[in-house]
Length: 165
Image (tube, rainbow, N blue to C red; front, side, top):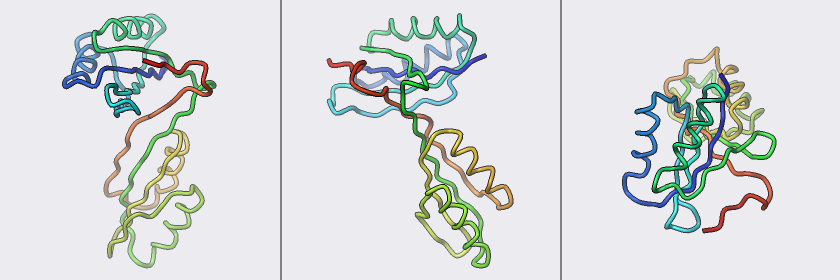
């Protein structure tokens, strides 16, 4: 099993995300993360999908998604030719006596404290998946009350593979 990141450029129409995720569901393909947002041109949405499978399954995913009516472009974002980022929000239980220790760990990772309550902190961190996983593992001694991850967003490096529609 291997992981691939696909970037789709699709028409910005209602139901497009449902049609794409429905294809995965019908075929029994796994979606590890999916992010979507409008592009600089409001007619189009950029969707980043992280999926896994063997070579044959991943090839079928790329072909079948590419055949969908709303899909204008699909490309694989290879790790060495792309930049990936993910956002995580983590609510950590921290009494006043523990707060400075949590803030010190956050500072090492260049995370931001975005909310402070009497017994908790909310931390925002952006980075690649391994950075986020490492940060979460360092919080092991603290109680994580809530955690929200956005999934990967990514772009290819340089201007060679920019799709202009």
